Length: 445
RNA sequence: UCCUCAGUAGCUCAAUGGCAGAGCAUCCGGCUGUUAACCGGAGGGUUGUAGGUUCGAGUCCUACCUGAGGAGCCA
Image (tube, rainbow, N blue to C red; front, side, top):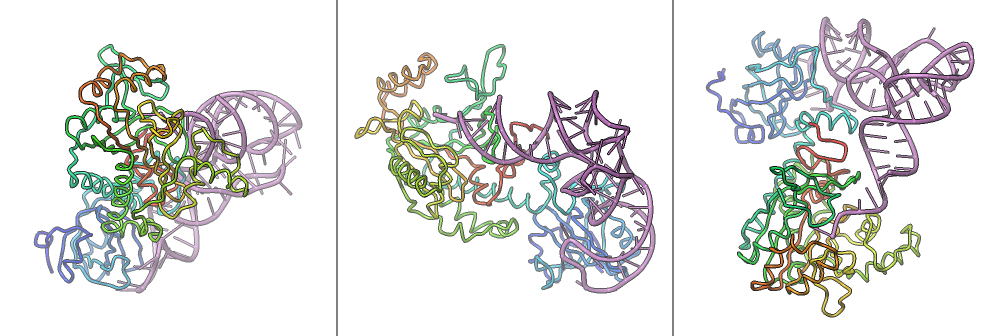
């Protein structure tokens, strides 16, 4: 019989390489089933779960009793022989021959997350423990894959990573949606977007992107909102609207296809219908704002949209849901009215009342995942727009400089990572897509 | 800020205005192939808070607190 020191340490994800061999796994007791003189402890180690088999007459009394009395989530180092078994969900079982209990969870204060349903409040209150469950672990691995794929996508296309600052100076626009911080007796804010800063980087390095957290103090309480979320924002000098629309669809497709290729088992763990993801490939449907408005009005006439939408407004989430429900892949809506969009967006030369901008709406009601535009390249035009929006020109002096010293057409977009993860995973709420969600009502743990 | 819903055992939920209960978890016992194992038993309660109505309130009324979903908001 092998001893603990001789059996090589491995992970549950890799036990398939050790079929028939003794291995050591370092992890936790996930769950346990008993049948008299036979114990089935289920171990997890962060890479997966594996069921152990422990017949009383095959192990020492010490090992048998230790496992019989083991409590959920106690930490253990376990040694045993890997054996392929068709009855095992993961394909392999572990014939345990030794176990070392590192820390036993006490009987009178057991692990609070049971193997059954819980309410949202309870789970969020125990988020630090909830992440140990297979479903949450799978979601977090998919998040990591999407971030990895995003960085790969830009790195391989000659983009330079130029992260934007998180602390920003005096508010340029309304402060109601910004988190204020004291900066050595000066007023500062947590960033709401890195966009203005990466525009400066694009003028220096050509093709750039930033990836980092952004903060919004909005009183939003919906399945699509967090107060702290992560955005990836590419910005390209000399790019026009059509260039970033093509980039956006290639990018979105790359994230989905990478997840399908590399994290399929995790998608299955969370029960995602992957057939809804396989066709997420370019070209994505492209419609103008005008066409989207027409679509909403026809939907209203058919009784599928509650309120009649009038040209000129921005879409609410029920509107976005209806538009996206008409397609089997993300839809790109472009050229919104200038009035409802940001001051820095370039007007369409053919129709100046429209902005050269695009929103990418995810299918299945997940709403806007990308917002982008061509930026105003001309100094006087931008200065005029700043005044039209009653913004303090002084605060934008550096931003205007980008148009004084070699101003060029340039474009970019921002993608909210959590909404993409929620969509790819098919989740009810974005709070499960980030390790520790920050919402209107929660900052613990 | 507004609308709707919900707060009962550690968790998920029952309980017509009339003795506060079940399942899971925990503990004890049984079971050599269990898959949210199963079977038997035990412990576990200031019914969110404060008032009010009533012979009697988990249940009805008022206010507040907390949470959930949605709206608005989200350059």
